[in-house]
Length: 459
Image (cartoon, rainbow, N blue to C red; front, side):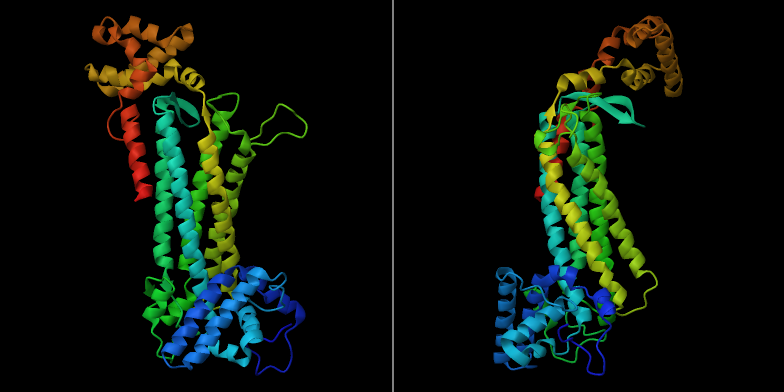
């Protein structure tokens, strides 16, 4: 094993099994770019405040840049038996600048380094997720505008309930994903606070200009308390929750797409590029992409649980338990950032079958609620109108006759005007056009909603 960043008061090396058990470099090497960016800024800050000569600061800065470049270009450069990414950087830096590498750690603790790098990772992941969600919302709005007048059934309790349009359904999803995007933007703001300069837990004795350091690294603020700064993983849990909420919505979307695109419904056809065939049944086009989107919700939800349980019972200050934060964050980020482009491609490639949707939306019981509202507007108290229409539905089922015919016949005596316009009440296009208030199914209302959702993610 390579030299450690600690150990002056140790007479023996760590137990090998314990060393391997505790090493985080196999996974925190992902933070190499963030670690080096923060270390370079810190080296420059040391020179600016007079803690080290400016020439030494320059050498450290240049050397750190070389480490990053070699990590990108030299095969096997990352294969080093070190404890963590911080140890890797200092070891490789020492190969370039010698003992000066240790000065880059002046008054700096890994406690502040690790949380700084993780905050930078989360900040970038929030940006990527927000951009990907904007793309998904745009795809939903494009497809929704295409199907703004395509009537289909809306469902409650997994039962056809009332007629809506495909555009109305797409708008509902667009607004949900727009909120998910806002969650990432909110999480980014709370992640974008600089802990560097906190030391191990009590601050730094050096006259560092932390505000300038924050600005150089793109942080909006500096942490106001060093003990809180090295302990805080709120931002990680919040990021994981934003991932989990988005992935849960992707799971719900996937379930509906699987269901509606199946031969039993056939509302639309999935793009071939996002399906796979069967090894046995030649006719199959399986919605594997959607099933994976649905399945990955479990692992992202688990990441939230991992981060919360990890923190339960921890006293103030850095504890080694907090090393477990990174894999949960990485797993959540990888799942959602991998899922969003796939979902966007599926939505963009959907082929609507308007006839199939319309046939499903023409089932007369879907218009029972509209008929009850029409009766109430004709003077009958709504609860009584509800019972009257329920009885009409029952009669139609028993007599095996169309509901509209039963309604026309039995309402003619007391509600002649309503009986005369029963056909309009049962017309799918009229039914969706009737709900023209904001948030309703009328095509023009749907288009306005889609336009507003699109503007939300463009702002």
